[in-house]
Length: 300
Image (cartoon, rainbow, N blue to C red; front, top):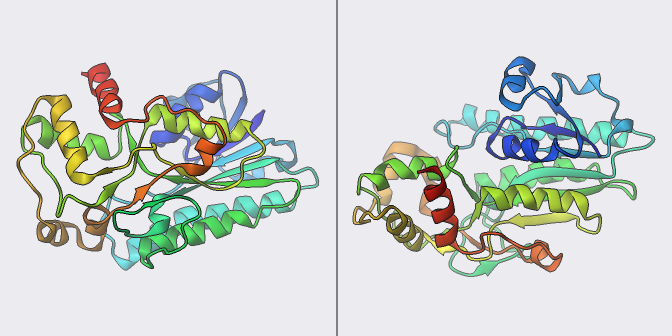
């Protein structure tokens, strides 16, 4: 396939590019072609404007671009940066697809389980409708709606609602490891909030599976089938590291330090990947302990 990818230098994109470039022709849309080439290698074509490519020649677009959601405190200005980095580009890509005479057959666009907003302990799948109205839901909903514009009989749209991606090369786990290695880890707030996670290898394989299976479309939960409470997650991470996990992080401390963004840690969801499982996808790491062991033992 001829594939256009955005967000290729991010945590997921980097590993996905490394895998797909072996069997596909990859073009990366990036703001900094030289920096992207240093990260991803010379087998890929790099462009810095979507007008530089003929969308009629593409088979698939994988849209993973977006300002990291946890890098800065959520001021009104930062919220706008987060929104625009996702929604404006997605609108641009969808419009380019709609303008094609022979459009790409697949548009895979990012989203997140934040679509559901904060939830209780109920396990929820793609059919769940009782979302909690907050910034994370509005962001994901508008992002998904921007992508859906591209949907026609010729182009299917797949919306990847990503959970907590576990990797030792970035993301939430790398932020958790230092205090846990020092024996200073523990549950956050009540510890009962859901953590819907996925191993980076499964994340990459899931996107590839979606790309290759034309019958899949719409919202797809990209999470392992065994979501955990924050308390259970903390206990498992401490177990793998052979450390205690006795130091809880009170909600008020997070609220003082992070403001509204603390909601991502204090609240959560128990999300299950019903659609991808029914489509026949097999997780290499369906359970948390083996997933953490594979990552941490592999990387020391």
